[in-house]
Image: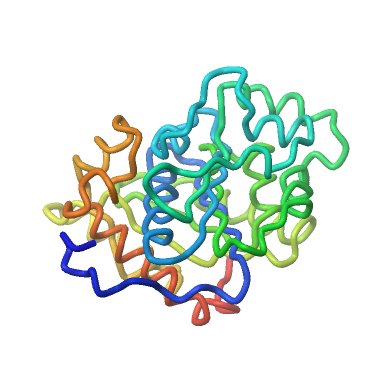
Length: 280
């Protein structure tokens, strides 16, 4: 933080109760995992207590947070399929106080098939949250897989809010309508409190006219749900996971780290403003 000239910001406001946010978009490569990891790290660095739940079988969020994800290790799979407690699965993230991760392993790849035969299959994660004492947490961020299957539905049923990262490229809005319809279906039948609270523009390339056009279109459609901050393309952001780190610790002075810091600050300070204003 000192590198960015913001060392005076020791802490950000904590929400009155834990915010459970699923980070979802069925389109791959839009920055869901990167967004989840770096927002979580930024919030934790400024006095919030954050749990990241990795629901993506690829386990990239777990890798970026330095979690061991060898096959056979206890993971979120054992929570969803076997009913294991999140208390036994949450691991502290090295080097960032107040940040924990429930890792994913390759075992999660078969979870959607195994969940089909289970009772209340859409609410397995919600039940795990209900049995988990998260009164000492400020945020739970759920990294969803790039699909609209049972894992993503579980995340939406367990969450209060949906955050959608949108890539500033040509195909960004393709398929977004289906995601919005799924959110509405979950809200109608499974989780009446669910709302889309945040849109984050990612991979912004200021050198192209297309990026600004996509950003303008998204802002025109979603209005105040879109964070003012846009996340630029950054090599440092891509490099950080290979060192088992978020970009916030790998290179805090990079443009990507500063953008995610600003986005996390908005997320922390906009909580009251956004409450009740979200629409699908």
